[in-house]
Image 1 (cartoon, rainbow, N blue to C red):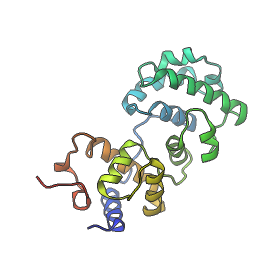
Image 2: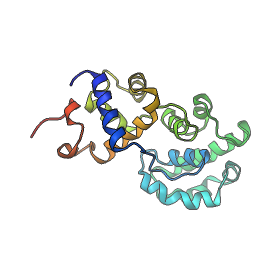
Image 3: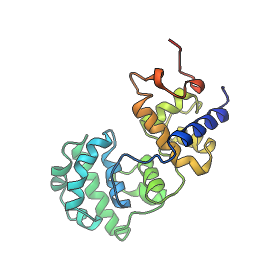
Length: 212
């Protein structure tokens, strides 16, 4: 099974049967919380982020509250995540811009979100897809790796290129779920260093699978 459209159908059919209600492992209750959590999750595990956000959100429950915090105050809550100094600076600047330019509301457009300090296209896509229910395909390191190993993309050397090809191939109605399918598959089965090919349900369509 080599055609990409056949691979996509195989993936959709399998995961719709086995993981139809997939969702983010980040814990959040609002667009603001998802934005903050996703910013913190860059090059960090969701598990670690979920350990620090409850106290952070209790203290700064709104963008207005966060905008009043100093970088050092924010740092005390997030010091155990990766790159805490730069992330505390980004969170402070992000909250201030939300208040100054967006009335304290998280924007629901790619243009608006990527204007915020520390928010790139991947983070913006996560917020658009899962806070606002828009069709989007965030591409992180897991999605990037799995898409290449399975052969779902061709000559796609950047996350943006991978995103463009995946958006063009997956049915629109499952696109956001497909992000989670590929992400979780990469996180728990198709791992970077030691992929668990022996338990992988997608070997029939995988370009990288080599039988032992």
